[in-house]
Image (cartoon, rainbow, N blue to C red):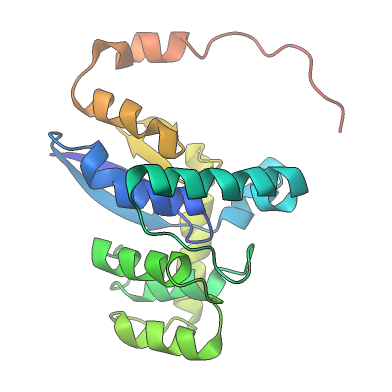
Length: 214
């Protein structure tokens, strides 16, 4: 089985949709998933970007598109009461749900995603957070320095790998960004020759032209 890395932050509706669609999109492929929680805001800061929800018309489009994609694929989705929100508590719970140095399993990730994207409530409402913490395994203290540092290190490692957004799926050194890239991931796993290293590099080869002044 080919190992694939799934980089995500539960703040992202596209990451949630990709998570739900992953088994169907990769049906017939031989793979095992490493679920890697990262702080999307840290990536935005590093790469000098704004999140979709920080640009008013882009936020409107994002919410409409995710509602359509959920409808199209039959995925239950209700917008949380507030978005964007601070996902740190959720991310730390995920890191703490696995032993030190390990990654959360699919059930833990599903529990957190559905906490956010089902029901339309505030993801950080204290009583809901407490119930979520009780529903997840507790291998580490989510408020410990070790857990906080592990999340920072995971985000830094993802950035060093070239990850700039979520969801991102990594397959044998190739990065695939976005829920709409799952078809490409499946083709890569099935050995489509389009993904041969030489061609993969060539299609990204054009030299950058005019660059906007910051």
